[in-house]
Amino acid sequence: MMWPAEDVGGFHDPSLVGKGLAGSGQSTMRARARVERVDPELAKGWCLGPWNSPLDIAVGYAQHPPDEPHLHRRTHELYLVARGTCRVRLEQETVALKAGDVLHVGPGEAHTFLGCSNDYFHFVIHTPGLAGDAARTDKCSVARTALGLDDEGASEGSEARPGG
Image (cartoon, rainbow, N blue to C red; front, top):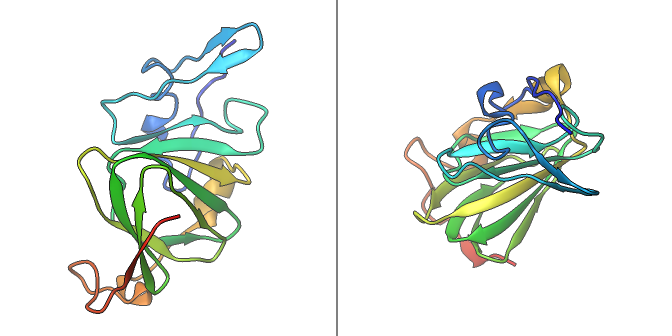
């Protein structure tokens, strides 16, 4: 069974929707199992969500997450680190993540990715899963200074702690 890919909005790049599905915009169905495969050639993409399934969540991934300070008004984000390491700025704290860590970012919490290892890869789950205009209006850009960052990245005195 295939679901059409639609614009899911927000920081979700419409050109990436469906690209994570075996690289062809398709999913594989066997009996009751639905397998989604990410495209290793893409920096980030979205696999599942209300635009192509009956799920109330959205599932995406990133190999090279951008340094793009933002927050979500309604959405909880769960980052599941599969490999590598990364530094994430969450409000006024820098958090060091490694494979096996899960980071929860709640609604209204400003965050950005500061630097990741070359082998870094995470899955991200958004709940609720929003699509179209709802997703676009949920995401708000935030000034780097709101996170205690200067224009070049992490501020002096940023304190890293092990993810976990």
